Length: 112
Length: 110
Image 1 (cartoon, rainbow over the protein chains, first blue to last red):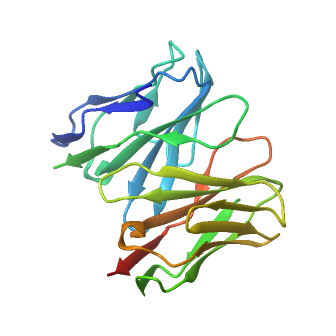
Image 2: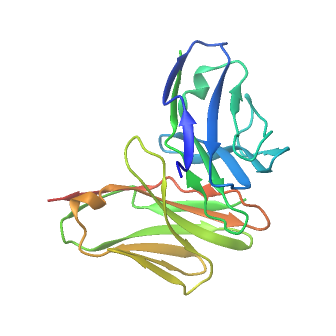
Image 3: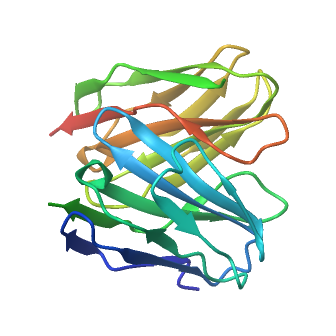
């Protein structure tokens, strides 16, 4: 199993550009989520999904969209990038029968 | 609203010098408390889940304990390879979302 994979590893955007961060898992986990990590603030939940076709907002959802058309994939879309979205983004997944989440390697995003 | 506070923010130990990291939490209905290890430039790596007060889990030099208000991560005779940031998180109520603390950056000197 590859576990949770994320692409790209690094990305630089200009203000106003849009892009999609990819996340995939091969463990057949129902629950998937996106977090951002900023210095001194810990990991904060952006959006999550409890299964294909079902998504919901987390603590900091503004400026981001998600969809879940398959169990395996959970992309995060930045609609119009802003410097405040400069961060490291982590995708995570969790099986139905457990609460612990397993994280991907992250995408480091810089918005100029 | 769930809250998690970790202390200290940073800890430097000599190799072999045992110590503990603290995670204080406030939740309405704890479903689980989680410890993760994060190395620079990597994603958090799952270590332990604790579900109820009095529970303990061990893995190599690490031991996690839980009370009704806090959790401790005890590190016995640490080695330089234990250097990392240790994150604590909670899940509460019917939700599966995690609320994280800011972490403790541990450095073990040879």
